Image 1 (tube, helix red, strand yellow):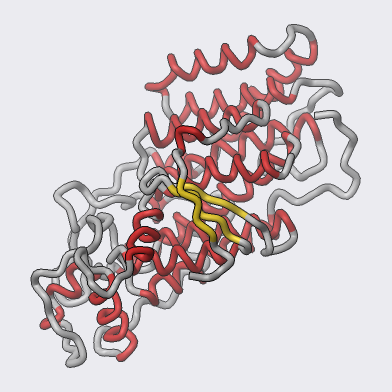
Image 2 (image 1 turned 180 degrees about the vertical axis):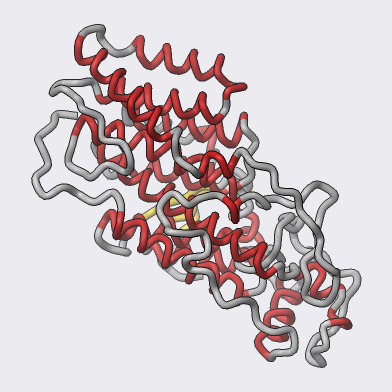
Length: 413
């Protein structure tokens, strides 16, 4: 482990609450609606979070100015309430995405508005938020999220992915979801996994076979802990820690909205691009690759029918690693936001109860890539390819969206 990474073991229940106004409040409401109540797995949850945070950003920027809108640029009178605009936009979008949660979302919205003094600024903020919310709900990505795409198993055989659980495969609709920023889901599609008969493939199999097994004697206690650390729901894990980062840096509401939108839109499109590649290549997981190594035609691999990973394998194709795609895209967005990769940063995990501290953003990426192999989920080259894809997506989003205006207007928000 690099010295730049420090570990603090603490009770997360005792961690200080993060509050930075309406932007942070509705970010937390969004993560709960998407993951806790909506039960979306990380691939789809990333897209939902990207949509909601694009709305929060456009509402905040519509009031405060300073940055180019993502999609909707409402006409907002001076002095409008940023909190009212953000709450209204987020509420409208969340109700549109999750109509079954309307009662709870209406209650949260009423509580938000109750804390804002009545008057013209509040009314103007609400009007701006309504306009933003309506515009964001017209995103074509939403049609894809509402679609049903059944999985059709191709002819089984060496290298071909087969479901690793009795439940339906995850993320089958994501390749057809229109990205929030990319021109197409396949825009940065990688070249594909290593050929089964290659030395690279054999090396990948041998390494994960040794360190990813549930009872591996080659994996250290610390490596096991790190592997488990990164089995938290990565959208919840990233969002709560992004909010902590914004609070620690003392970011204003509009800058917090920008940071969250950059990270979540980059993460959204990284997941869409990743699942496009996953279902294009349909590459098998280490679970089946190791158990059936006697069928792969590679004399350097050895089958072990008893092999099991540290934790149950995610039920979608192996290549490329979704966690690597998502984490790298998010860290690229953060690097562009702060103008440097040397950003001291901490993340916690509800799985292990630890907080890990990093001196550089790339330390997070390197750790995730190792952790997914130690968990027995991925081949090392798949994590590397996932990071390469996420890097390209993150840079594209940060370069083409959420840019500052040349002459931002002053605001007290």
